Length: 201
Length: 201
Image 1: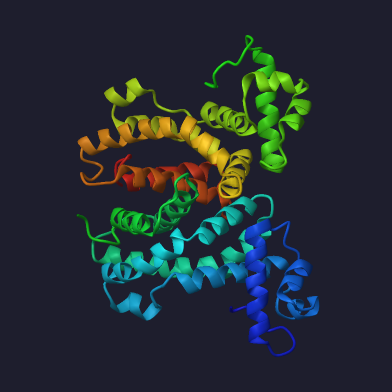
Image 2: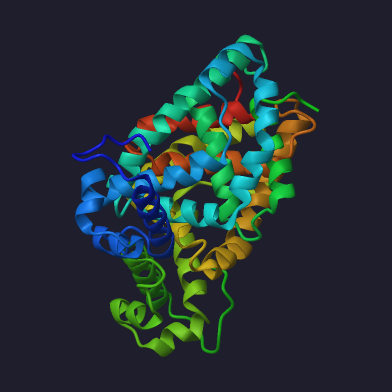
């Protein structure tokens, strides 16, 4: 939702309809099945309304993905990361993270994003630069705090740790027999425990 | 390569051509773009020759994927796992694992497999049951040995640990700026270090 305003003032209802249409079409049909024209049609707006806000379909789909991920996963604020215990922050986020990642549309979204990473690399690049990297900065700060407190080892490469957490969760939801929300809560707890973001035992 | 022989004796050359055609087509076009008919045509054989060996296209594509993964990644034998140090075994496998996972066709294969996990779940199910689960049994034994030796914590859920390793590597190759083989060697080393399969520091 942080894309620059292009030209005229925004219409929040149209924006919301466009983002929802983009998310639905992308999940149903992938990048190649989601043109700006089809997204505009499904949202009930003209193509110029879409182009006024988003320059390319990759920018639009990335913004649409972010509405699902950012609204449903409860991230800790930068201020909270600097002042509160990592264990407390992670514990507080487990329920919403489990609900978000166990949802069928999350699985479908992960499959589409990973599935397009090689055939349509622009989408991953836009999403990565605009939305993932800022979150990785936050996650790195959280892990640095845990490292200061001694629950993460001093010489740990935190970029790899973040990949291990995100990689495990996204891999798990694509496996046969994906977890329900209770199983996902247990799973996340174990992932965070193994990285030192929750206490052992 | 362990699919049951159906009907007549196998022709190894035809089998190899069929598996290569299936792998290439799947990487190029995904599950929906890879019919048995198209695979047979590209391999220069008749459809009955394919059906004599593989009952469904999912079974065939899973077998084709395995030829790439199993031949290029040097897995430790069950006997070696029981008798040698996990650190030594993992160290010995790093170079071939780095070469295999840094290859462009590995990235393309991961994207296709993950991309089809929700839209065509049969492929993931066949591949999982026939090829991944046996390897996870081996990986679990390796981690159990490391746990006995004290480099993996006693209460670790090893299924989650395996997901963190595989998840990190497959996620990393789908990110923008995928690693070359030197960077991948360093990356794998850090993943294995964080799980206790290589010594710290």
